[in-house]
Amino acid sequence: MPTREQLIESLKKVFDPEINIDVWALGLIYDLKIEANEIVKIKMTLTTPMCPYGPALIDSVKEAIKKVNGVRDVVLDLVFDPPWVPSEELKMQLGLV
Image (cartoon, rainbow, N blue to C red; front, side, top):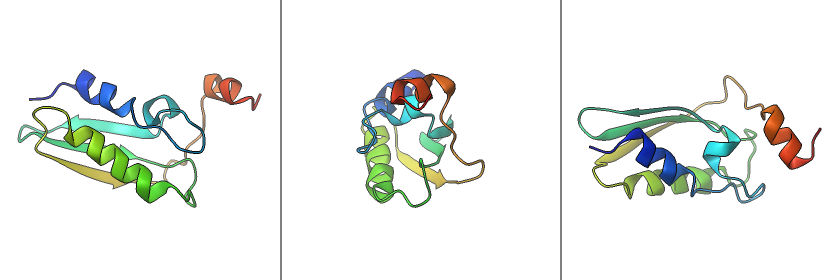
């Protein structure tokens, strides 16, 4: 069975193509669960509902998780509630503060 740490490391390799920061650091992953049947459930959002790279980013997240040894399948729930808000640290990194 995969570990949470393995999944997080895999997510850290998936970058938002516009911002060039990984989905984990961006805080786009709201929830990450490993079911007993080796199915990984992810609740994630996008920086904006109109993100032009949304479908590609979702596919990249699924592909990255499926590469982790022991993952049988990925169920991804895309949500926009609550809306994504960058952390203060991320705002500083992006030069928004």
